[in-house]
Image 1 (cartoon, rainbow, N blue to C red):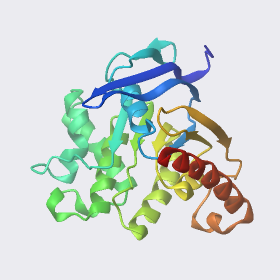
Image 2: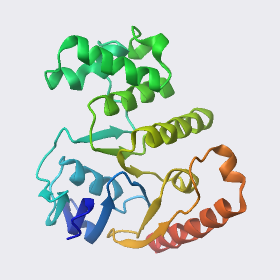
Image 3: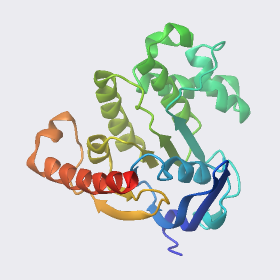
Length: 260
């Protein structure tokens, strides 16, 4: 095992039992993610992307294989891993400030300190004017910004993001992509980001893991050498589009395989 890796996925297999019998979601997957690296995972529906994230988060257990953070095996959830889902999962009875403070409150951080930390990250995602607002008063994009601020506020070493922008309109998605890139460059958390959007993956990632159709295996890992900072203008470059087309071709191969 590479001692420098932040996350090590070793020989990971996950089998579910359904009405139709055994479903092998992941099959002997091995992957290493370095500290402060931004990795995107992409592949056809049902290829095990979210299953792998849930196992890294400690929300599910492997059928076989192991997951390590640094040199410690992951056997359950931990505060060093923050999870951001497509569904915002905000508490509707709490304000923006209270939602972002929630994890810090659970960690018994003193009130003045947790309020200061929460306000820092609320400001970082551009919601400083909405600290007293409730989720029902926010747009979808604003709710996701609250979820991202909450994820950062507890200062996890690793951010696990499962299609966090998948339910948003194109303009909001574009803005949050840029916000996330700026935040990642400032905070340098290790990021494991799942998406169906090839363009989004190429814009955000340092490496892209392409998954095969079920059973999920790693088909290829592509290094994205486009320098940071990146923005929406980056998408217009020849290099960006060559990489995007290459990855889309690989993903489409798996889509066709899935339909057989």
